[in-house]
Image (cartoon, rainbow, N blue to C red):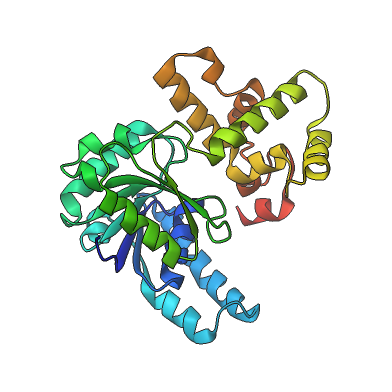
Length: 292
């Protein structure tokens, strides 16, 4: 097993900066990078707000917060961020060509022993591994949104992935306070999202057929099935843009019209109503709108 002390997170968006903070709080030395300087700055500002808030709530001591802050650095270039990493976690958009480009660059910049993981929620690592000279060290390490809260991490072993790589990533996830799930064979969408996608597809189908409003469908799922939130509220939380990107990526791979994003998702995406992070999706989030 590789001994992981330094972690690089590629992508400082909502998922990336939260994964980076999780690792920093757990005691790893972390670098976080993004091609968008504004996104990187927002990630840095989030960390500076979040850690003191955790102290106020009694979730962290002042010393733990100070240590976590000292553990994390936000760097503007991929080379600088990855050059000392034992584990790299890529957390960019669900676009295969973009991920392949990043992994090819990481193969040049990261040390030869480094494990290269993708946080993709649908794309399997075997679609990326051939861009590197280290396929045995390429793996899916899929966190859930919000990464600072959600416990499960799907660790997906591709046919190219070494058992030692799996063991290392499972160990890192546990040290981050997560519950790692070992998925032994690659499958599109893994476990959680395959189940979730089936629920979301039926919810959208019922809404689009005029069977019930999205508000009532959410109420039914929360109060009838005991879910913490309904499918439409969850789509807003995940990000409708991410759902659209994942659907389009899948459709381009299969050519099956059934894999296209639903008409409702396409309409929301086109209008820029991407959910909670922009202040409006199926529901409105006035506070988030003020922040953006």
